Image (cartoon, rainbow, N blue to C red; front, top):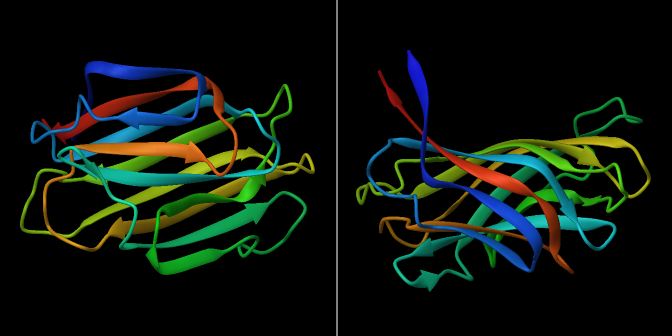
Length: 178
């Protein structure tokens, strides 16, 4: 069985931040990390959400690959706002325009396995929900990674395409076998 074990400091409270950087709790202690988005709101309407990884003190701005799939409450297919890239400057976690409405927020989980393992190329995968700028429910799921080196990942950064991450929190959990 798996246990969800919180690491200190595990919660990042967002307050009009251009980026949300989670790095003090990522190390070799756990083989899997989960970043739980809870009521995360954007300041500017219709924004995509992106991620980048940190290696030591270097925040990588190239060599990412990803594929994001989206579903929208007024669509019948799981192909709304699909996006993919190789050689990108970041990972597009939510490609649909997220609403900044008073009752809209991003909720869900982003996973990072084995961030300290230096024998593998790093990847992440996610499942997030929100409301888009047209007030439709959206769900995005996807996968991606940093494919330049097998160096240990020491942090992850989330940010909106434009404007700030306005409010909410992202909690980091370490997961390991019992």
